[in-house]
Length: 64
Image (cartoon, rainbow, N blue to C red):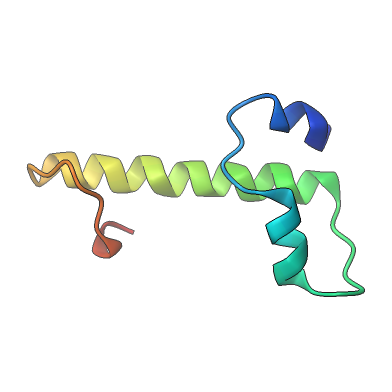
């Protein structure tokens, strides 16, 4: 899947920020962005389920 296609969807991560964190001289495959975004989505969904289960509507760090 192309990063440009992901940008048109519900991509949570920001490609340029990922590049900044990785640092100069580090190349990143398009598949990495897809997988990272999938992992972030899963983390958010899991945290939301935990918050709801505990009667909250606010995500807290410990929901991760």
